[in-house]
Length: 259
Image (cartoon, rainbow, N blue to C red; front, side):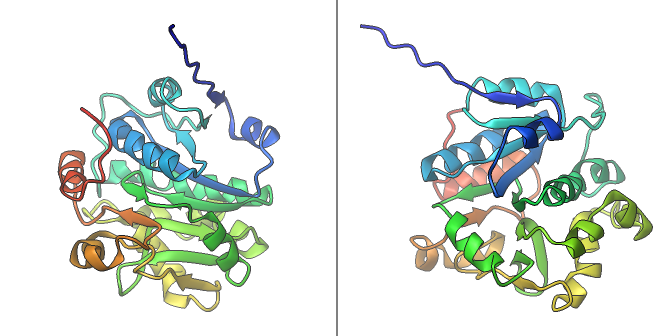
């Protein structure tokens, strides 16, 4: 007997269309163009294993089409004119056109009254973090990963509130000259975030997530044996380039694809 499995995936043509068809109060999401295809698949597989619902905001139609064949998730077209012949290398001025979309999406979701969890595609979900995050957002407006010194914008959650809706509007971010934070090889959006929110965390009711529960890069590499069983996510940052990230994920048996 042959069994056929049909993957039912909803591709929303606009963010407004998605909001009209979704009632979740907490939206967990990732953002990517097709260049990040393998990391997106691995992130979504880890979410599937942990029963965490993730929304993909697709910056080009190609990744939307390919992911829709593999996962039963909501995909939102958030087309920003990606040039397939352009290399959007981490830390360049071109990268700015990719990386800041996380905030513009957060702004629209929060404006609709949704709380949000954003994560980079090099995040691996170990277990369901949603109850933990919801509890934290009752007392804080922002909870965010830390590298030990400042905010790490690869994983954060925000509560819908007037102050953050105002701050992350494109108009206000443009007034704060967000495009000047980048192009020098570093994490431009993180520099922007730390310049305004990280430097005045009490004002924005922003607190760090526990490093042992939400570890990134070097902290996980140093303490993985102690925290492996209790961490909610692992953020494989501090490594540039998909090939190197995947190699590191394989080293810790956190890459779930057969390439």
